[in-house]
Figure (cartoon, rainbow, N blue to C red):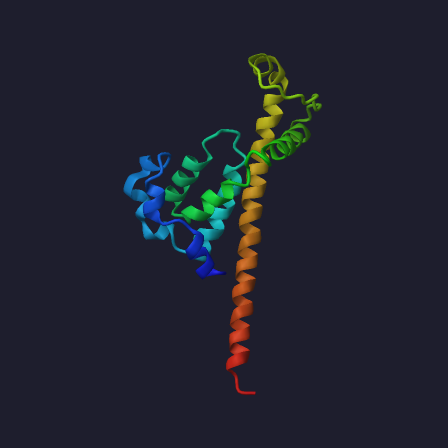
Length: 173
C-alpha cells in the first residue's frame, strides 16, 4: 500500500470539516480511527462506498461520511469510492442497474428515452421505477461485498508477498 502517496493526496480532517456538506458532523470527523490506513477500515470503506454510489439520490457524500463515522471506516476511501458515479458514468451505471432490476423482477425492459422535463418524470419514469430501484439495491449489495472481498484479498496477498520478500532478504544465503 503506497502510504506516503496516500498521505500526500488525502485531505486532512480539518480541511474536510470546513466543507459545507460535512459541517453537520462537526468534531466527529477528527477521530483518528477515521483517517488511519488500516486494512479493515479501508477495505470496508471501499465496499461501503461502492454500495453507496448505487443509491439514486444526490446525497452520496453526506451519507458516506455518516456511514464512515458510525462504522469507524476510513473517511477518504469511502468518499473517494462514491465518486465512481459521476456525471460521465451515471447514465451507464444506472442503466446497468435498471437492466439488472428487469432481470430480477422479470419485467420487460421499456424503451429508455430520457428527457429532462416534468412530463417525463411523471409519465416516462412510472413503469421503470420498480426495476430501477431493485436493480440499484442488487448492484449495491453485490458490488459492495464484491469490492470489499476483492480488495481484502489483494491487500492480504500483498502483505504476505512483502513478508516473504523481507524474510528471504534477511536470511543468509
